[in-house]
Image (cartoon, rainbow, N blue to C red; front, top):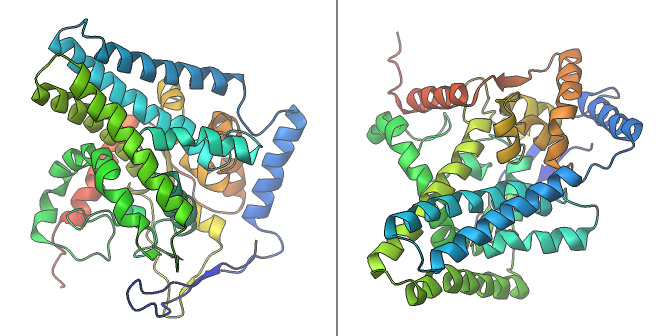
Length: 378
């Protein structure tokens, strides 16, 4: 891997900002070694790095759950409270589409066919998000600048949440471990109505700068948003024989479940005890290679929990995902032991929390730490 030097620019003045440069690789290095060992694993087993039968079956089940709950909601056969319960389940199925299907496809991990990956990734758009913005903000920015303050947008969501130690501390942050979880529930509804539009038309997204915005992508943004609003707001309001406020309440509840599910999974991977937030030096240099950075800034959780492994797109194996984003997540449990052993050989950390709720507790403690007033000197 060569040095990564990505030029950033000010979104208004379009003047060059600091470059971020990762440390040079030695001839023998962790990234090269772990890639060779993982490649050897797939070759020795004679299996593809992409989706297998398990993944295809999972995809069918998730999409079936998503479609059936939607049709039952529109059927007018159930009571308002039954429909409300279905809305919650539908929101969870929508999160599963994002975490399992869309995420893998946009990373190029679902299949080795780029065109097919793009088509499968359209499900991301059909559930209200935008694949073009996600590819930039997540695949490029987050995966390159993981946990680097002011470069990784995933740790700079909204100012009312203080997710890294260099951010200005406000008085309200001391309560963020309480209100953060409510804000997580608003993540997806903000995403489909606000976030995509704002990020799409920003020249600067973290460490990625765009001079212009592709006309084709502008059309796709508004086209798929219109489809989403029509299918999940207009049609229910026209078809369901409930008062409009019941329908809007169900729509909001579905989004709350979806947003909370997706947000908490990503938070437990990086905003958790043990992870680092390395700052570039005056010359813009982060004094370690990119792959080493991932080991200091990323954590796994609940690796032995089969329910978590199945439902959340393998993102509890976040270390493996960051090192091998183009490997389908169903393979992460198998290659995790290879990564763990190789990290040990290179004296690199392999951060992990044994349980899901233990990881949540760790996340809460980090929120408290970043929200608490700094201790006085002396």
